[in-house]
Image (cartoon, rainbow, N blue to C red; front, side, top):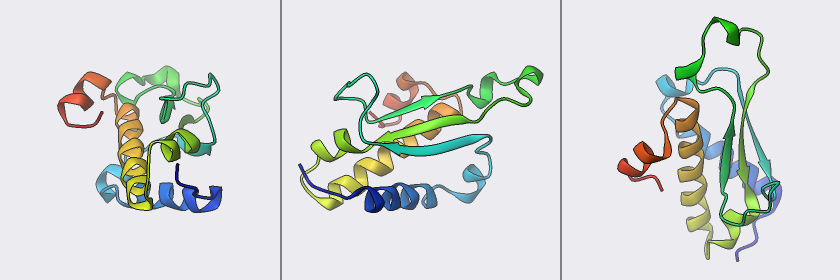
Length: 116
């Protein structure tokens, strides 16, 4: 397992977000992105989690809702990587994967697109 301090890991998540095309980033609505060390259910395979209402399911009753949340889990990502380059790539993939859920793209479609 590679060691990446929390602040550096958060910077990598920020870099992954900066890599999202501007026209897509502009569509992120009412969502926050946070980093946690581990998933609350101690699932060692869970790298990220989207909690909320995807854009495709929002209607007029969504008005005033608390922000959706994308959580990126630091330790499981670090445990699967042997180099900083691997961490950077896996963080990018995980961020894109969870943002896709915000846009209403499910795991089956993500798998078809090459995001595991």
